Length: 278
Length: 256
Image 1 (cartoon, rainbow over the protein chains, first blue to last red):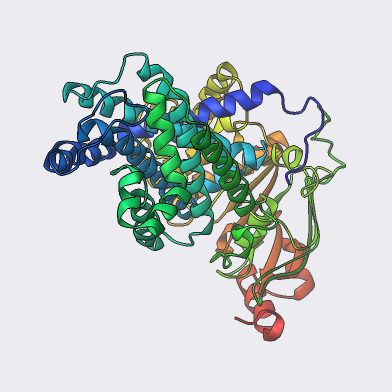
Image 2 (cartoon, one colour):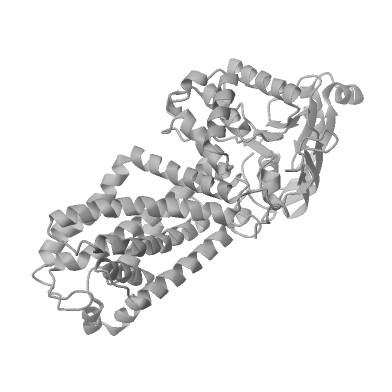
């Protein structure tokens, strides 16, 4: 894809400064958009405070890994809601990519002499960093709500969050390379976010779904979001779920490769998209 | 780092560049050479292909036919070496209005991998040059349209490109701001031997001594120094020349 610079033309320091610049800009924008932060927190909190409280009596969760005892429904859905934060954040980043493209700031990004796959990776990491901040705030509130995973879990969940954030962010990036205009974004919400979220283990354990519909059970198992949630769930209790890890890693790599393809100047959507006005 | 400012080497060399969007031919075998220290006006109506040309030279998408060289580097084969020598100001505003002027400029410097100290030093110098040094910490939102444009020009120069591309950079500005920006750029071209490609649809932005390239329906209709072009064609001014040329152009060249 992008050509290799002559030796010495671009050093590792160039790459690092670029990464810092992109993450720093995203963090500044995040600080300036308090509404976005509040919205990102309110959404899962509504689920936790209202939905989970209502379903607590209906849905008992039996002992299943990684839990050692019976857990309350609130405890069960917290990892799913963490996944939801990252899912929305990934889609939000993709929305901002489309916005950037319409507003022209994508052009200044792509003017950088660094390879395009690297610029996209920096964008992706910046989005993941923001999502981890949101998750930290959510987990802090959940702790006050008596959802208290072991303390070390807050540390061991970090790698899981990084990977699931990368996968969901890469999915958003991939979608953004195929969306022509901002208006088409509402469709993404309906056709991507909702199916991913509801057909997953975020709200109910998969064995319960199997009791009702084996077909749905298989669909949930194929859903990468299920694996992101399970990776987070096990991570929060200091454990690794190998299948989830493999699926999340594989999907992250696949989505990213496709997104880089989508943004490739010679092949992707940018080249096929209709001509500019000028 | 190989020298990029050799006066004999063209800053930009576009050869037989063609580009289609679907069935529409946006650029039809365009050739054009820019040398350092040359202020070149790319004159054309909306839809003439100016923005497509800019998008290809800045590698927003890759050219389908022909070649683009920036200081001798083929853009497709050495994109990063070519891009590091290009500065660009686009038609749309691309500053982040919620961030300060300095934050915007530092972000751009980071994209080009400049160390922070050097970036701060240069942003101070560039802002001073456009008379906005004391506005560095103001939010971009607080600046006027003309000031934002000047900041964008300062930003485009932070990584010391040798080739500057401006696409309709004065669009929507009042006469005074337009004049100030043009004067600033003419000075830069003269003093720092920058190569500048200035795309516009306004004939009054061409002055004697400028080289002008007339682009119409994706084709170059005229290319030369203004006075020479006028003498050659017998037209009184650039407006008359432009109408005469574009009226006579074969309409079939780029349908749609």
